[in-house]
Length: 98
Picture 1 (cartoon, helix red, strand yellow):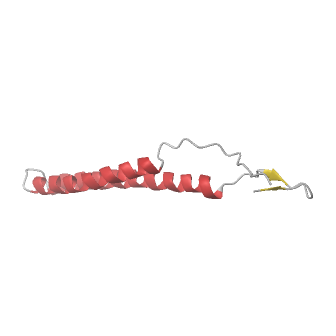
Picture 2 (picture 1 turned 135 degrees about the vertical axis):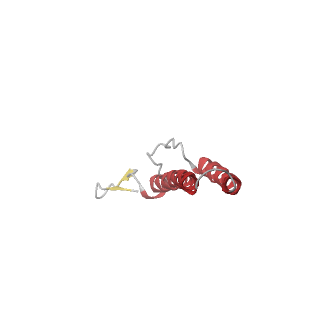
Picture 3 (picture 1 turned 60 degrees about the horizontal axis):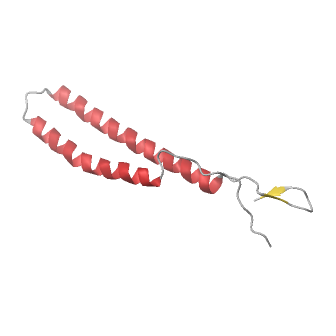
């Protein structure tokens, strides 16, 4: 009995699992630095509105990076495990199956 081979070619995903781990690691390092900069800026001359704007920008940027990593991971999972193309034809029925 011969083994079926898949016709799917590997997808070059710029945000694969290794890249996702790197981004999450860099984000975990940036969060304490961002918190320290917020504490340092607390005693500065900036107004509360400016501090809140900076804080919101940092949170939005962090969320956007996390969203890109999560969505690319979901896409990679979908392409690898859910999206299947028929690789064999049944000799009896003529239908393709995985």
